[in-house]
Image (tube, helix red, strand yellow):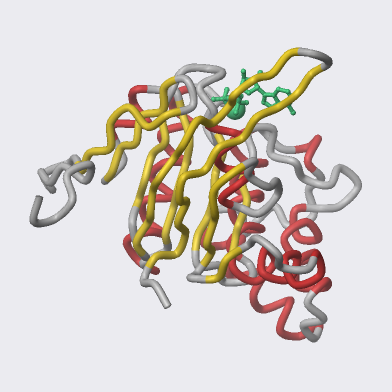
Length: 242
Ligand SMILES: Nc1ncnc2c1ncn2[C@@H]1O[C@H](COP(=O)(O)OP(=O)(O)O)[C@@H](O)[C@H]1O
Ligand SMILES: [Mg+2]
């Protein structure tokens, strides 16, 4: 069993649209250790969303393998895979993806209902998380009664509710102003530091890239550079002992 929370080996993904073949990922190798804080950066169309969908088991590679918490996703039956996603992975999307008819409280509670967690435990956990993301006073608001930054905080609380091994956040700050983006980043940093929670987030914002402990740059479906930063100084693209 590996120590990596997620691993991609030789991953490619090709899309066919009519007769046109798009090679969204052309051979990606990466592995993420527990507790890391990783930015995947690259211009629009470089393959960030495709990569996150593969790492989270929402899509399958054309070639290559993905492992979550040491388990290969290939060949896993759909029920087992959904369960792995629910238990181990928190998803945060650019457009928040909250359920519009549910309140903040109910949106965060929803994954616990899927897991058949008893009501008293749900209440405690959801309140605790909404407090942690600074929304303790907004339990009854619906998404359309909240700002973008507030909605994204709800999405982060929802991503954390099942105690995942990693959070995959695809351009979480792309739809908010830079001040709100910085506050969301601070929140993720705090959760990373306090709970050793692994975060992978994609971005094309230099401010967001700069906050990461490890920066992976994608270019045309390939990893261009993979470096440690913020004083860690180790070039992760150079294997130890090389
Ligand atoms: N479902 C799809 N069908 C066809 N092409 C796709 C699909 N998803 C992504 N692509 C193409 O794959 C490439 C990478 O896209 P994407 O992963 O969304 O990049 P990014 O998130 O970095 O903007 C782009 O050329 C995009 O048009
Ligand atoms: Mg994208």
